[in-house]
Amino acid sequence: MVNEYFSKDSRRASLAESTAAEHDLGSAQSVGLLPGHVRDDLYESISKNIPVISPAFRWAQDLNLVYLEVKYSTRFDSPACLDIFDQEFRIDDDQHLYLSAMCRNDKKLLKYELKLHLYNMVSDEPEESYLEDQSVGRVLITLAKFEQPSRWARLLLDNSRKPPNMGIQWELWEKYEKELEEFQPDDDTDGTEEVSSNAAGDDASAGGEEPKKKKKVKKGGKKKPAGKAKKE
Image (cartoon, rainbow, N blue to C red; front, side, top):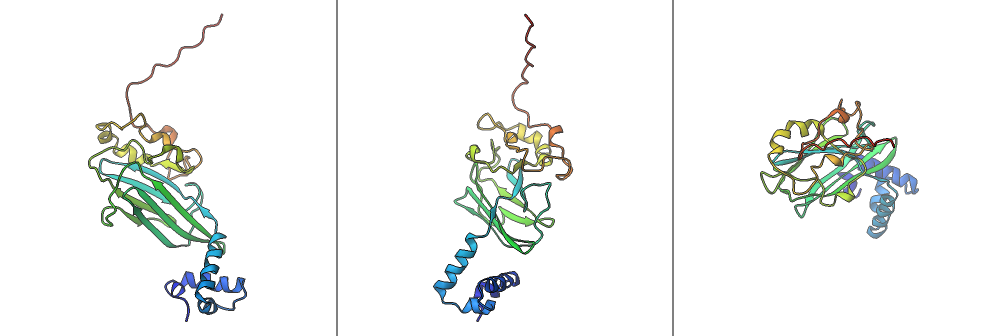
């Protein structure tokens, strides 16, 4: 019999067929009939050769929820993977977000994986923190803050370890700007400095947004411009 792993998903079966051919095993059935330890070693060997990529994402918040828009691509202004399968999403220990998905791109397998240590705790209840499929190659993650209402100073607990392709979802930041201004962050950051010029495709093609023209969440008074140096 074909191993149960393959029988659940046609794409897995296709992967088994290509794996069998690659290793001269004849068919997916042959892979399924291999001794358990040999089959496990084969799967592990294949997995090690699959590139792991961090997907591009943007985030925003209101006083009760955190929003993450994820695109299965390295940039928001680049095409997304159209053939996604084996998607997995979970919250571990109320503060660790994990998202992964397999991508078949031009007969090659890729794995997108996102691991975030969040700034604060969120609910791990499926009806409160969940993932929704959006347009092809995109998902929206909604996280319910454990403490409500509250304002997070940033998305990640350790801001020095932020992914290179992380950005701000400016449309939602502006939507909730007024209510967020009533709450002061816990430190000197408001999260908007987490924009990376690399990642999020911070140009007009990225969802029609123009982050350079967007206002940041206000904080404190304005600094006076530095005067010009006098010529001697």
